[in-house]
Length: 360
Ligand SMILES: C[S@@+](CC[C@H](N)C(=O)[O-])C[C@H]1O[C@@H](n2cnc3c(N)ncnc32)[C@H](O)[C@@H]1O
Image 1: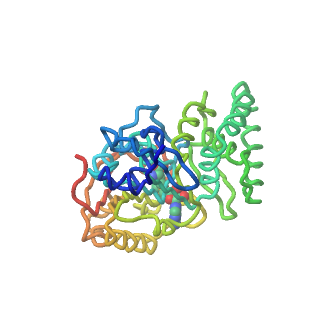
Image 2: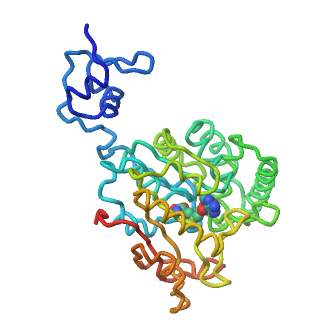
Image 3: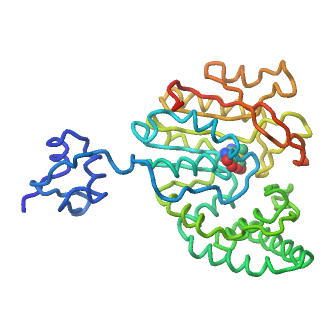
């Protein structure tokens, strides 16, 4: 049989070489074979009727959701953020970056709806990133560990649960102090998140996780179907433990990037920024704004969220000044309004965008 290269097919079919390669890898071209690093395509092959890649088609599989509760999680303002997704997402915009990923409410929404060519996530919280990585690379072992913990924990009385929780918390802190990266650490991370007070993640000055036990009667410790679905969706995702600025190389004009940094505290009592030992102060917020401006110059589509200082001080223009060249929308969210986290109220939050042409 006579063969042509991807380059020859791309010229013959008037589509890019990359698209030819993607169509071959999706088995949409009969007889195409990978020899070494090259696709060889039968000369008799014809261009598929719909030559768009399946990667750009809407997904039909199970939607995925965050596997941890996370302070500042965006589940309840997801609808507003969704309206800001750029209209070319999944077509001309083929990459997604979420450098402050946390529980990943927006990430999982995007992974449920679009199949993009490249996805990058990062967070400064090492144990969170170890857990994401185990879910991607080692989900069945993680599920086994969680099943064992669930089987042990749920039948216990309240006092027994308490002893178990604090033993596991100590074990987690020992592994964490030794920078372990094994599956046990990831399983304990999920167990503690599911059973601790309000799903908080807070560490003391020595870096030890110090959240007390919560009072859930029947917490889901091992959500197997979601973990497996999340694992499938994370397969081609770059997962990085580090500062948000490490995403600089990844983000380009084909990228939609969502930045959800620790919120600027509204008042001293409302402050919650200790996801890790280093806080995120006004100087950090200013550096982030500079970084976003740099990405804007590259042509990336950026959305950023933050608290609205005007909730407590009408004349505080911190973010209006910082992002004066971008568009700022004020949306209403139901949030914990004090540090205890039980009193909730509706407050305004900021969604900042650097582009026109959102979906809705
Ligand atoms: C508001 S939370 C993100 C919540 C997330 N959008 C969700 O839906 O769960 C902010 C995250 O930023 C992380 N973080 C703090 N400083 C960081 C930095 N310099 N670089 C990357 N991540 C950082 C924190 O560990 C935390 O997970």
